[in-house]
Image 1 (tube, one colour):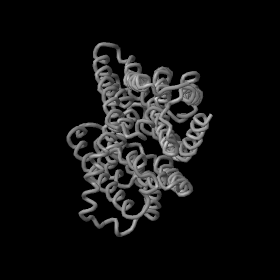
Image 2 (cartoon, rainbow, N blue to C red):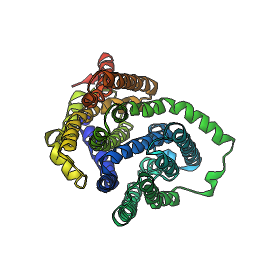
Image 3 (cartoon, rainbow, N blue to C red):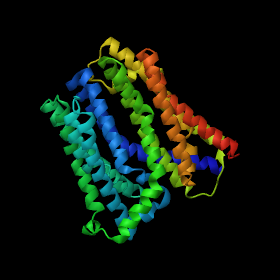
Image 4 (cartoon, rainbow, N blue to C red):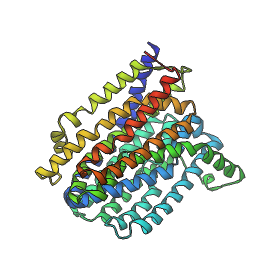
Length: 414
């Protein structure tokens, strides 16, 4: 009974954090509608590549630190000298990631339609609206987190609305620039809540802390970066092996699944918060079944009514019958990833709480490598329409690895 209460508590906290983030994600979906309308199907596909690249460099800037801070420090990360060291680390990593993104753009995207957009969003790395989310969550500052998201929702709606609706921005660089400007108010709010001039003083203690954190965060960083060898690889594979129209159609379904996957991360955070309040080392199968059924029910429109889901969410997209049919197929297939993610949520949060990070990092890396190999190899041998199926190979393998590990350890009970 106590275990069942914990899973219900996890769902409640996860729902709260998710709903807070849905404020901006919901508006983002509306903005994506206008972007798709302004850019057209083909350029909207390339815009998806740009956003995926940006997300990867956001993960590089994080380098697993947010998870590490939550798992190791909790509320202590918002207080005293530890807080200053953590913030200095986060600022330094963000600056390095921005430089890395510029270098990546020059080397790999110079002849791509997204080149200028890459340079613009590299600047955006320095002003991420979610930069201070770790501070609000670790400190249980739920009201401030809500204010931050509401503020960003308002600024994002206003600025992007003016740029896309009034001025009809229809180029990737211009839209990327508007997105950077829209993030500034929420970033400024975070600076006002969690920034002092002392942050700029980096001494010997800070350097030692940096070294310790990099060493401890390495498995988290591997896990975080390896996660991009899963669903995003499908998008890059489509861009390399499929026609531009298929890329555009695929991007619609890909965006919905990535949005839903992002919300799943908040459930892992909520589970970690609850696990820190209990010494139980046993996973209960019934709890996993309850959570998996919850996610399956929440995502059921994706595979039961994909056409209506896509038309409702992307109501302004320039749909054609062929593009819509392709997007429906992709959405049905990719939605299986969400169910697989749900089956392993409790196992992942337990491993993170117990600091078995190197083992988890090895598992997710193995699944990612297999996913890349299957996607690229399969795309060369099979019709490109099979790429969505190939893209969930990593999810299946990772879930199987985790299940086998916990069953062999005798850690799973009914």
